[in-house]
Image (cartoon, rainbow, N blue to C red):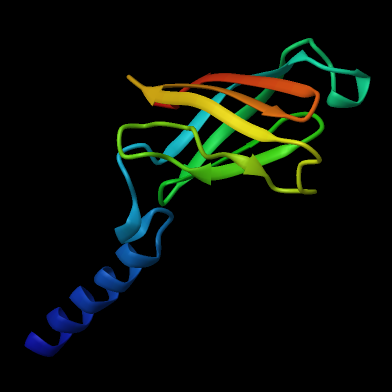
Length: 125
């Protein structure tokens, strides 16, 4: 009987560590559905009209896909989104992000070369 209980507990422990988030999860992990849009830039940056998208945080790494670019980076210890960078080509001139996850809401602005994008979303309950 002891052997069965120990085996069941071992399986549960392995399952808990391999689930999304796992032991490296942060308080900011989760999905933040919302909208992304181009704030400024030429036509190749994408459309100014808001497009449904989401910011996803897994193990403290945030990812968001705008219409023409994906960005990814670590979430700071207080929810800061200041280190996002393009998941595609390297920037020609410069790249920066400013943003925050706070109170279940995510808000980030990403600038790369001539383009500026913004995302705003709410955590899914």
